[in-house]
Image 1 (cartoon, rainbow, N blue to C red):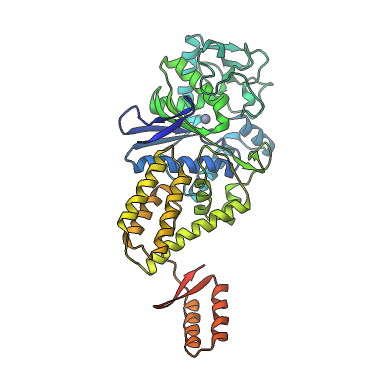
Image 2: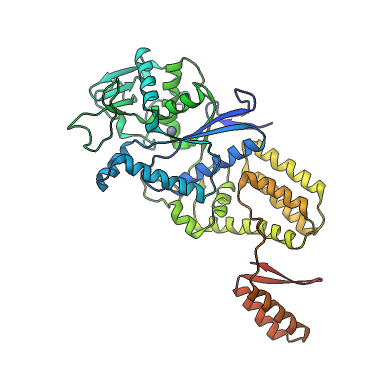
Length: 455
Ligand SMILES: [Zn+2]
């Protein structure tokens, strides 16, 4: 039985989709004004694995992600660079997809641009006005949080705090309440930024607020209620709280979402990695140093809800652990032994039990390491073992199954070494062993003769 931790109820609940085996899954996507950093990558990799696991369990998941391509940060950056904001956004959107690809993130069914949903946004705002939740002031339409009784039910609060992700668009001295947020911002010549994009609509010339973009996208694709909404922890308030208020007020149906899932932060020396602290590393930088598999593995060694500290030591540790698994696979491929079907079955059971427990990837990985340890100890592992690991890899996307080709040069050196060994010229044989090591390979002497392995 799959259990999912729900931020709304603050406990693990049995997973029951609204419509049988069909799952509508939405995750807050990027605001495209800069390269993806590895803090974002944590969220996107962890949801990539969660969705792949659900699919593995035969759920038919529609994974939707928004692209915020209209936003204050985009407008500001475009102004500094003297370029068109939408052009700038779509350039970074392209980079985002390139970075997803480089990290083997490919579970998303559909990416939806906010600017493709302007009519639906207008429709939602109009419904909120009609029902008395939205009001107009000189610079736009706002949501009155005091009108929505449930405001605060997700986060347990209604007031802003210092660490909240807020948008400049929500600022206005004329607002009824400090926490009210913008639904539609007017374009006012002389007051708005000169390069600000706007749309001519029934509500006046302007652009959408941040929170309404997501609810317009989800309502259009899923309707007023759906199964899972995911995102990073800092989006709980006010962003997700505002989403609930908007759609539940507009549709009169609740809950908007059955399960709210939030990922823990990626920290650097105890502080959240982010643009504002300027302590971020981009995906482009990190993939120059580490393989996508290593980065994915690094995130899977901690639970998605937990924070994880980013440092070189932890990444190297992940790299080494992953190498042990890859080496195990290579060993079986070059030198297959008997499979222990009972051990595979037991490991599978443990693995899925961990994943069913709110996607506990560290525990799932621990069962794999125990499996490898036992297999090594008893000299086990053949075709069925490989099949089992391949199955797991459809979820994790971290292991290597390609047999590495050993270069001819290394093979020649190995033969030479054997030759010296037969002549008992140990010194010379040892010199060649060192040469082989330098080329990234090592020799293991077995009863059947020497076996070459990559380091
Ligand atoms: Zn969002």
